[in-house]
Image (cartoon, rainbow, N blue to C red; front, side, top):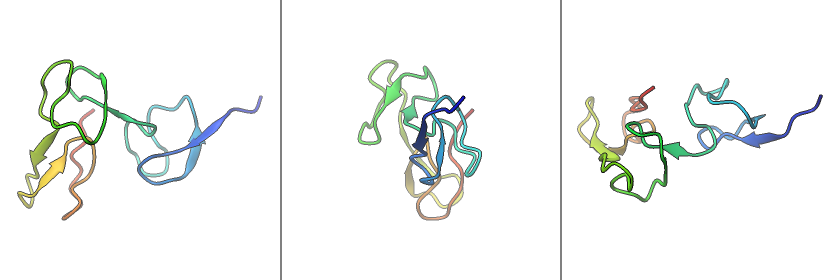
Length: 83
């Protein structure tokens, strides 16, 4: 049975639409971002989760630059995703 494939928002590889992790880049939430605290869908433009108030931007533990909590740091590449 053929399944519908979508691009991972992190790496662009097409993967099956029911996957929770990208098999190519290993990211969780390959089709959108979820709050690491309450799992509500969030957008990268949000500073806080609208449901629980979790901060979505943090200082990277490796280089101290501000980074979106659901991705890797844009400066040093440290993985900030939580599972």
